[in-house]
Length: 433
Length: 176
Image (cartoon, rainbow over all chains, first blue to last red):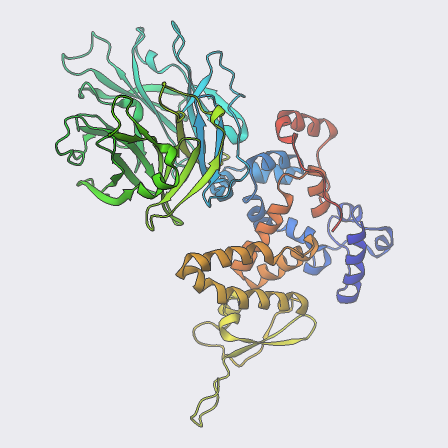
C-alpha cells in the first residue's frame, strides 16, 4: 500500500487524475480520497490509469511479458482473470511461445535422474525433474524430445507390449498412444523404432512415425518393413506407402529428425531417410570412409541447430576424431570439426584405463552425449567418470558442466565407471498433447 | 563535431520536447534508436532541426531512456566482437534494472513503448516477467490492479485443475 500512496502523491504533482471507464474496478484499488474525483467518461485518458494498470490493459505489452514466463507460472496465472485465461489459452499465444529461458539440454540416467543445463551454460532450475506424473508399472524411459514434447515408452516387461506416451512435461500433460503394432492388423507385430515429429512453427499438430515389420501374408520375400504414421489431428495410426526392404542391421530405434525427415543409419554403411510430409523413403549418401576398419564404430548421431552430425571413433586408444556434418543438399558427409581430447585426458586422468592383461594399451572412458550448435557457438557434450564436460569445438577449450557423485551413476559392467546417460534438447512449450 | 570549413556546422542533434515542457537535445544516433523519432524524421521530409513533441513522455522517463540507449549503443558493437564483450553486455542487462521499483519499470515500459525503443522495452518486459515468475496469483493481481472476475466456484475449479502449478510458489515479496 505504501508504494501506491507515494505514487499517488507523485502523480498529483505531475499529472491530472481523472477517473473514467470501468469505475468499479479502478475504485477498488485506490484509496478513499480519490473516489470523490471519480466520474464516468466514455474514453480512457492515457495517463489517468496507474502505470501498471495501463500496461495490463495494453494487450501487446501484457502478451510480451507473459510470453517470457515459464509454463508452470502461465498455467497458474490463468487464474488471475478471465482476460488472462483467454490470452494464455489462445492458440496464437502458444504458437508464439518459445521459452528461450528454459532452452537447454536435459540429461537422463538409467535411474531417471534428470539434470538440466541451460543453453548459456548456467545451471538453472530444470523445467521438470521427473516424469512420475505418468504412472506405468514397468517404469518409463525417454525416447525423444522434440520442441518441448517428449516421446517415451514403458520399459520392457515380459509378456507385455510396450506403452508409448507423448507428454508435455512442463504442463504435466500426457497421452497414451494407441498401440502402433495393431495398425490394420490383428497380429501383434514387432516395432523396430518409433519417432516423434513436432514443429510448432509449422503446425500445432505432431506426428509419430513407427517402423514395424509386415504381416507375413502381405509381404514379398525381401520387404520386411512398413512405416506407420500417427497424427495428433486424426488421433489414429495409418500405414504409409508400401513395404520396403532394408539391411538387416539397420538401426531404426536411433532415428534422427532433421529437415522434417527422419534419418536412420546402419553399421554396414547404408542409410535411409523418410520425408514425413512427402511420405517418401530415400537412400542417403554413404557414411564417411572407415578406412581399414571392417566394422563401423558409431559413437554419435544427432541433430542440433539445423545440422545433422555424425561421429565415429576407431581404435580403443584414439583421442582424436572428427565430427561429420551432412550437406544440406544431401550430397555427402563433410568433416566439420576436429576434436582432440588430449587436454581433457590430462586434466582428468581418471578417464584413462588399461586392459587388465596388457599394460601397454590404454583406452579412455567417455561417452559423447551431444553435439550442440547454436548462435552461442558449437560444443561437444561429453560424459566422463563423475562429470559432464563441455568442449568448445571452435576454440578447443573445455569446462565442467556439473558434477555428481559416483553413487548416482550406475555401474554397467565391472570395469566401466560411466553411467548410461542420454542427452536431449529441450525447450518448454504450451502445446497440447 | 565542428569542422574546419566555414559552412554551417552540422549539429547532428535532435530536439525532443516532453510532456512537462522540457526540451532535450540528443545526439542523432541515440535519438534514432527511438522508432517513433526515426519514423517522424524519416529519410526525407521533416528537417532534422525541427523540434519533435513527445507529449506522452515525461522528462524523468526520457532521461532514463537516453541513458540506456547511450550505454547500449556503446556496448552492443563490442559484444559482437568477442566473448568478453558479450559477457559485459549480459552483465549490463542483468544489473541495469536491479534498483528500480516495479512501478518505475511500468512507467518506463509505457514510455519505451510509445517511443518504440525496442531493446529497452525487451529488457523492461523481461524484468517484469522475472519479477512475477513463480509468484502467487494474488501478488500478480495486486501488482497490475486486476480484479478477479471469476466466481468462487470457477476459481476453485481452476485451482484444482492446475493444483500442481500452485505448489512451490514463492512467498509474496515485501513492498517495493
